[in-house]
Image: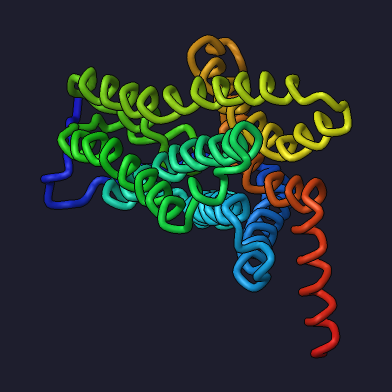
Length: 316
């Protein structure tokens, strides 16, 4: 068996995969994917523009929302070129260094989204459970510290994952099962022992999303307890309404993530295209839906978007 590694004279080249079994229909299948990418990029860019320009949105809740939009925008862009390249131009080749770089940003931004959702849960917890100290707890400096902490955590957990992938040797079969580089997918092609890589991948997962998800659940248990202690039903409803957008954002991030993990682990009998479609959907659902949800459910964002659109229309 031919064994290859990154020290060879010629750099390793992997082959990305579109949708198995539907190669002849990929051009047509790419149309909805292209539309989703356009919605994700334009929607999140609009949210960032609105929060940046509208001074009334310079508050902790909207700063965290802008972090979420920046993360979703980055997540969309890091897979855009390879996914549409495979679908449109059959551009399947990607070298090892580019693959590792894409994997670093893909998983890094995924973990960052989980961290931002936790920060947003903390924001809602303070706003409802300790409203009198809200502005003193969530100062601009504190928000910046939270954002930098989330970023540093992702870099720290992803660096060992990337460095140990560089140490692997690969067999002659270098066909990946997705249109982008995915850690589990990449290490499974290795001819050498990849147990350390698997352990590092699991550690990265559990130290980020595995930590964030229970903390988010705990924050909402405390929020529900605080809301139920409010005497008036109108006050309870108002408090719950401030959390609806965030609850939906958490659901559309974690439900596809858990579903994809279950399919990878237990869905071996499922057709290959099911894995591929679910993997692409997982990456696109949060970036596409988050701006829509916050635009529809958050009135200050709605008003700011309408205001900016009217101003642009008047300038034309």
